[in-house]
Image: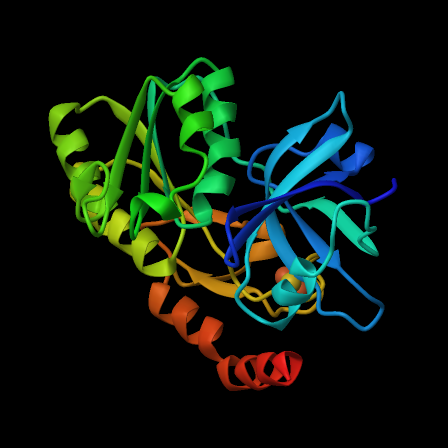
Length: 275
Ligand code: FES
């Protein structure tokens, strides 16, 4: 396992990048929904990232990250040919995929990359995959060509209306659900408000809804409790019990609170890094 960065591509310059990393063992075992934890140097923070694609024959995995704090900014300094100190995975439970008919996969922002891997899994299982993607504007959409190559329906929503529906993915979703009562599942990956809003839309339709939680993680193997979340009144660990859970049972308020708990430290750390 070399953990060598084979290719690096700026998907949204200065904001979102994609790495193809040489990790044959992970590439062979990873399934849609799994994630990896990266560590760039010995004292570095452990960065959990959902796997966006794998190529078991080439022995590679693809990850996409948003440059949002010190650790992702540090990751962004690496170039093609550099080695990532640790790539640990595949972690988490893979997405439950079976032939079930029509599945709607929704991705927002960088979540589109992770959703792409799950959508591909459903397509391979023989499901009719409806992909709904959303971003602030056309330039911030990811993986549309890839999704369009295997999804019979690709629906787009942008805040500014630069492409597709002007508005939110939830409006597109509601319209699609009203038109077709046979949707077997909805899967949403992206910002917390989006996943919460999707779960609210699907509830009255009675459509099972899965969301992928981006909890703060440390060890990623169920020992530290950092990623705990409340699912239907029960405490679960996103790293080993998830990261995917029933969206109708997730306590999104608690998730939001836990995600914000180190905001000041994160900002101070980024500030120091920039100096
Ligand atoms: Fe430590 Fe999940 S990250 S228990």
